[in-house]
Image 1 (tube, helix red, strand yellow):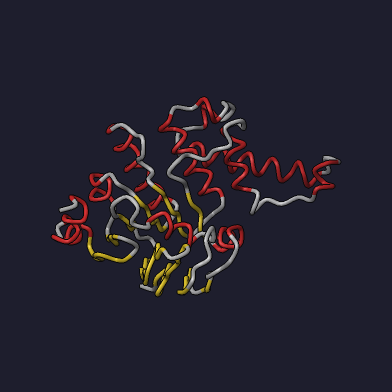
Image 2: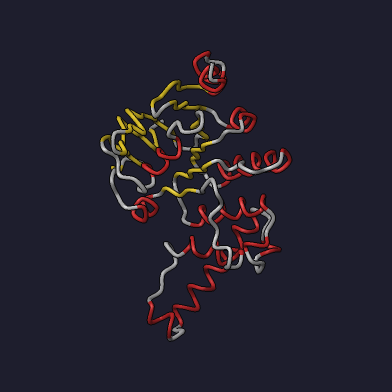
Length: 253
């Protein structure tokens, strides 16, 4: 099967610091892939390179056959990559449904004039967006809280809303940055089910960064381990997690 995401020789330096060096990964369509490593290993930097927050010093990023290296964040999102963040970044002052609608604006367009003058196309698009947003919220069992302020949702549900908003952009690849951060064990178990559900029902390819090894071993099919910005190990999850080098890197021995 052809790779959906192909990354070759990716690197970036900040001043004299080599934050990511010669990073390579190939992720097949429909895969659930994990990127792990100790704190400061360069994992979030890789996500920032993939999403255009940083421009790589060298290397090539290909998504579904298209070279997206060095594109702006919004262009990369339109090409098909969406992400969530380690620290939840919802529009807290907006309602739950309006957070999802923000993600839908890529696909449901009306002009500023149509919006200001409340022309027929505005109402047509708003109605279609509301319907699609409610469908997404229903999937995540958030439809009953559609009109709540996002800030008033419990932590686990805020995380689900962030994933729903990312899916609203209709990505090919979903990047999850430490989705289980701050969750209790029950919330983490529920999150694992949610991630599996998204992959299976949205025909989604998922790349996630995570420190929770139970979650990683429970859902990831393959892993890449980063240490000091370089690949330490790569391959099937069980083999990687049992690699002596990986164990040493995590235990710091």
